[in-house]
Length: 250
Image 1 (tube, rainbow, N blue to C red):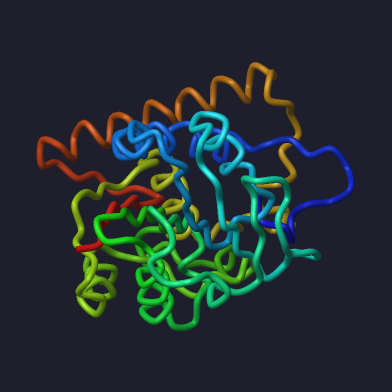
Image 2 (cartoon, rainbow, N blue to C red):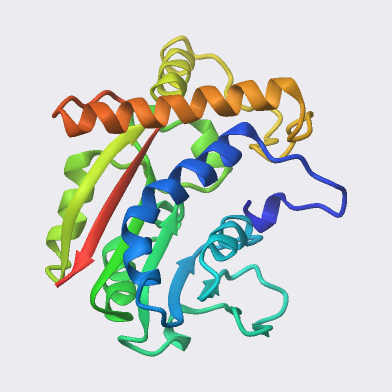
């Protein structure tokens, strides 16, 4: 969760965030399991880590992982135990220091996205991975994106143009996900319906994680993700609200 959405009150996780965490972590595991098998401490960067919800889920699964979490909104920086290290700036992390990097719906906030990807890549060891989730389809750009300070949404072509300017990275897998949410957002955009008019974003979900509605929506989104990945392996690409891309440093 973005730190701008965090309040002092107990907050419920939106089904979108719950599903994204579960599905993306499972998706990453095909690559991270190989790193974990080495038996060594594995380090990674998460740019735009926010409240570390995803990172804590990842580190729970991979006991030897440690995160270099970057977020300009952190009140305090420094180490929290042996596994969490908070920074305001990417430049504070040395080159070729981490095994992989993550940008989960954060690249769209960077004014110069190519330069940021280039700098992140410099900090990954040769052969390491770079994982992205991105808001997809520029046609969906709306007041909602403006409210949360997104600068852009990505198409396959526009993100490929970013990667062309960072030749050290090789794209090895990608697919869209959340077709169901794409349909809803596309209809809202085409019909000029308000999207999040109260600017509550995803942080003001009314129901707890154990609530039936939360559970059923999370399951539906999980199935959406899995269905899209299965189709992508067969060369069929459905539109989706988001896109996931895996790259490797040459």
